[in-house]
Structure formats: structure tokens, C-alpha cells
Length: 219
Length: 268
Image 1 (cartoon, chains in turn purple, green):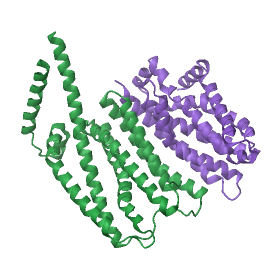
Image 2 (cartoon, helix red, strand yellow):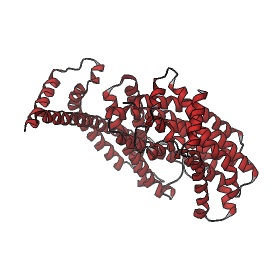
Image 3 (cartoon, rainbow over the protein chains, first blue to last red):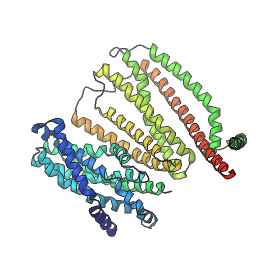
Image 4 (cartoon, rainbow over the protein chains, first blue to last red):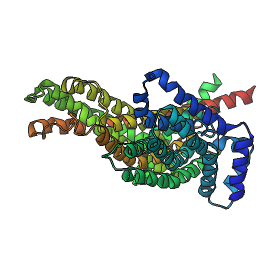
């Protein structure tokens, strides 16, 4: 399992720079927002947490279709399907590797982008914390979409369409926890704890669903 | 010419098989040919009952008095509410069929959830459009990001995603199994989405002007509503069985075309 984690990480870092492209996309999306809504710093600082979350969500979706496709192309997916370990566990490890390679850079890039959005320190910290906790959930739920679309030649867009509605709860609680940290009356802990619960829940549902889909997608 | 005769012979064979298959147990329905026979028998009755109920329901909907506050626009409710109920029931039917696909590898279950997805999307669209039309005179706006509206909208997106997935895969049985997984994951997720959307709405617009429940329903409104609900449910099942029948036929035609092409290839 550790070997698989390291293998996936090495592949992600060395081949094609998928992680960096995700961060670059994140940067671009966030940079485009001020052109759309205007350079008003007050407005930007108010909508900043939401923008960062949406940007991170979209960037996390970007690389999802590659989660199983490279393995399918070089045949290692068949080996994973044949081994005696439960497939869901393998997928969980793959998801963790994918998240470290693509999700973690997004979390690390968030503070810099928060500065662009004129957010204060508390808000930046809150967004970073919620992204750290919440973005794995996007990867886990995205694994189902990636597994479903693995056999499709151009599954990337379809994965996003299928996964986005399912990721709405994560977005809602991530953003509301970030706002709760800044705005006084709303308590921070309830949405934050629900966000953690969502991540744990999807950590089970995602790999199990993806395993089921991969077993059935075979010819 | 030979091709046509060959497929004609197969068709005739299928016809004679249909005659000999009698339904004795509920599990016999699993056989697509038996299902076709049953569908042919009950579809006219179901269609008739649907038409009758719709006639009664629509008559009542148009003749009962309007609401003292909402006037005639309250009549939209008789279409809107049943459609919204059915949009959820359809997903439940699909989830049950998806279990049938994954657990029993049932060909009929495959056909069932494939046929139900466009119907569900259609009912959800009806609910959204009529709700929007009702919202304009009542709330003064076409669309509000109210918790209920939003979750129905998300449901609509999920239906469309499932249809897109089903179309993207060529092999029907694989498409069925893969989309069954997605249907079930979505089914588990729907309560979470509903809950989170409720949370989101109460956080962002507390005590809003929007109230979908309106006044407590009077018996005068209740009767047409119930009749319309039953009519809509029957309509759904009629369309669903008809769509399943069409899908089975479509697959048979494809299979026979393939067989005929193979035979034609051998002769040459």
C-alpha cells in the first residue's frame, strides 16, 4: 500500500506535471474573477472565501479523469482488479496519493491567492483549514466519477458534470465554515465538524462506489 | 431479400414463443418476452385509466374556486406539486432498479432505470418550469435560490448527467451497470444535498419571504390535487412501461440487424 502511494506520487510529480497544472488553473480562475466583478477591494474581500473555494473545487475536478485512466492505459488497472486486497482499499490509497499530488498544492496556494483577494489573516487561515479538511472529500467523491467514466475516450468533461452536483454539500459547508470564522455571530465549529464528517463519509462511499464501478466497467 | 426473410423468420419464432409463455410467478416477469406480453396486455388499460383520471383531475382543477389570495394562479399547483412528487419517486424507482442491476444482473432492471431517467428529467423540468411560472406572480420573481428549488434543480442536473453517461457508453449492459453505481451513489447523496442546501439557505437568507407551503391546504384544493397526483403517477408508470418495451424492442432490432448482417456476410 505504501508502495502504491509512493508509485502514484512519483508518477504524478514526474509525468506531465499534473499537480502544477492544477495550481496554475486555480491561479488563473481566481485571477479572472476581479476582471469580472471589478477591482473593488471590499467586495473582493467579502466574496474571497467563496471564490477560493469554487476555484479549488474546479481545479480539483480538472485532474480527476486521469485518476484511473493512466493505469488503464498501461494495464496496471487490471492488476489492481485481480489482486487479493479489497479493491476499495487500493482506491482509497490512490485517492490519497492523488490528493497529495493535486489537492495539497491547492491548499498551499490558497493563502497567496487570499492576499490577492484582500482577505484578512483569519479568513485566509479559515479557508486554508477548511480546504485542507474538505478537499479530500472532492477527490473521494470524484473517484466514483473517474471510475464510471474510465472507459470513455473523453471522459473529463463528463466526470465534472457527474461529480459537481455531488460535491455541492462539501462546497456549502466549506464556504459557510470559512465565513463563520470571519463573521461574528455564526459559530465556526458546527459547519467545520460537518465538513469533517462529510470527508469521512465520502472516504468510505467514494472508494466503495468506485470499486463497484471499476469492476463493472471491465469488458 | 434473404436478409429480410431471415429476420422475419426469427420474428415469427419470437411471436410463437410469446404465446406459450404464461406468467405464474412474480419472478417470471424477469423474462423480457413475458414482460412484453404483459406490457401489451396492460398498457391500453393503464393509458385509459390515466386519461380518465387526467380528465377528472383537470376538470376539478379548473372548476374549483381559486384561492382568495392567489386567485387563479393556485391552479398551477395541481400540476406543479404532483410533478415534484414524481421527480423524487422516479429517482427511487431508478435506485431500486439499480440494485436489481447490480445484485441480480437483471436485464429488465437495466432497461428500467435507463427508461426512467428521461422521464424523471421531464417531470423535474415540469416541476421547475411550473414552479417558476407560479413564482412570478406570487413572489414577483422567476427564480429564487430557495432551499427547495435549489435541491430540485440539483436533482435535475443529476438526471441529465445520468442520461449523458448512458449515451456516452456504447455497450448497453455495461452502461447499465456503470450508471447503476452512479444512481446508487446519488441516491445516498440526495439526503445530504437536501440537508446541506437547507443549511445553506437558512444561513444566507434567514426568514425569507419565500414560503412554498402557502396556506394549509383546504379540502377543496386537496381533492383535485390528490386525483392529479394519482393521474401523474399512473402516467409515469404507463410511460415507463412503454419506454421499457420500446427499449427492449430497440435492443432486439439491433441484435437482429447484427445477426442478419453476419448471415449476409457468410453467404458472400
